[in-house]
Length: 430
Ligand SMILES: [Zn+2]
Image (cartoon, rainbow, N blue to C red):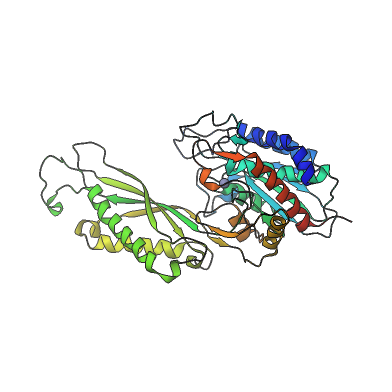
């Protein structure tokens, strides 16, 4: 297998380049968005064709958005019209363990500062450059190429491999949720995110919300009487007061035992967007602050979600508001729109040993790590009873930046690691 991968390295490179050339910048379907279309349907058609040639049962479908309307992670505007998912199931001969390989095919916006066009998949100095080359079309290509290698080398598996090609990971993660709802699961999973061939086994939860702080408009160049006598109230100044309280909460968390984890960073509340005021000579009447908060597995509630840290944040804001006579009577309001639960895989889980052994055979140390953000494997772990560490080529620090790249040597190594891990996990047919 190792030799076959070496002699067919050019095919692996062309596979990854083909994936990178589709502009699959994550769609934003929110009202007023101008980025509602991309080339993910064309990529999925390509993927379906490639999986079909491997002998997989290929399932391509557009999930029904209405079915997910009540899901805590589903944005009200999200849908899959003209945006199919692809799952290819390679049936084993029986008697082996099944493996889900899950990869997201959406990428973040290219931004500025590229040496070569972001979707040209330019090859220079042994690297493929392009948006998504590292996060994570390189990994998706390497894992798919591992399956193609097994077929070319005549290796028949005992267990099934379920290969999932999903959108939405960079936004709401509903692609993988929809694949899980379709019934796809396995005895374990591997997600070829750029982990430098280490294993992500713990993730933090995410809370996204918007806080609206009220004020009262007036002519800002006229000195104002007290608000009870009809004077204006500056919503931006009031928001600053509330943000001070949230900073205080982050400092408190930094000291707390339940906010520590051996593999994960200490959570904090971060303001990530602010909008206030409508006119330069008006007292701003409203200020909206977007907040992003992470939380640890130990901070989750009984259903695995973030109601506890969300309650702490709301209380900190309410306390700050009650200390201010305007805000006490005109309290800030919340709209929470994402609660992405944290996850943890037992370090003794057999899939971890299998990945580590594949590494040992190739002289690579595969280290279990935490990831301070999250990835789709967390959802498979939590909701599909499929412990799914991330395990893939490249380094996440190159992702979401100009001149993102993946090394051809990294792809070759990853394809070899995947070929070994798949055979070890699923077993060979006899
Ligand atoms: Zn990714």
